[in-house]
Image (cartoon, rainbow, N blue to C red; front, side, top):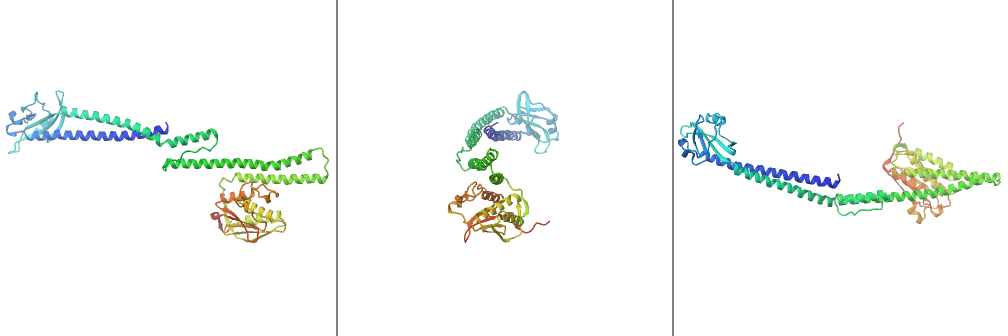
Length: 444
């Protein structure tokens, strides 16, 4: 069953219940009022019976009644055919039961009866039983008409509720239908460029706005994925082509001297290393959307070990660690190590011969400062973009992924990374981990 049908059915059901309860309440209230009027007239008629002259019709006072003695013998009646005397009347005559009102059927007539003792006022003696009756035919017909009218009202109310529910559900669920159509179109075409109108400020309006926001994020994500795949393919093509060329030369018929063969092998080793580094970077970026596996580790030990690694890689660069505080970080140690290495590698590449790099870890913030040329004005907004390489960096090895990985790792750990031109020259990178870092040492 569709949502529109369910909404219509629920609205119709609610209205039907309300109308039916209202109709039933009206019927029983009217029935009570009519019977109360009949009962009131019966009591009035019973009070008008003359107990001093109950053996004559004049004692009935012209009311539709019959009087019996205590043995059940009719004494006076103005009811054609009379009323049969029964055990309930005998109980009243014998003083075992008080007066009461009941419905009875006599000769196919529905009657309302008031059975009351006839008491002599002076002595208080019960001398008989008075049965005052009122024909309920008119009352029954009135109630039947009322029941029919209320039934028609209920049916009409349900019909109107069904039509109104259908119209309201159609108007209310129009945004949902638009969302459904957009989702079906996206599923068919695979392109999340579709948008739905966001009219209104209610829940459905907010749903449409959220849906459009989701579509925008999805479109941006797909576009980023396409660009990433295209850029990765482009970056992989260059070293693969070079590798293939050198391998073809080695396999060819050309006579190569030892120096030439050694140079080609060195190129192959270098290019395979670049390939391995590039693939590792691509894998790291592919993990950027996943939450890191958070386990506590010593950030200061990681920084010191990575600095030692940088000293081995960049032997002509002086690496200084003026302040490395004992710091515990809750996060992914492997990803953090790659981010720290990328910062140090970037600083080492830009420091040049006999350069100096200063690394410190204070208050949960890692600072890496080099004394190179710094960041050019046109490069500020692109420093952490994937595959971006400044004009000065294009002559250096790399694919432009290192700093973007630093940014991804920082964000994954709830932190930030910023860069600024340091006073006196060079670039200063600050990796802040916010709540993920705390001072101290892990207990063994």
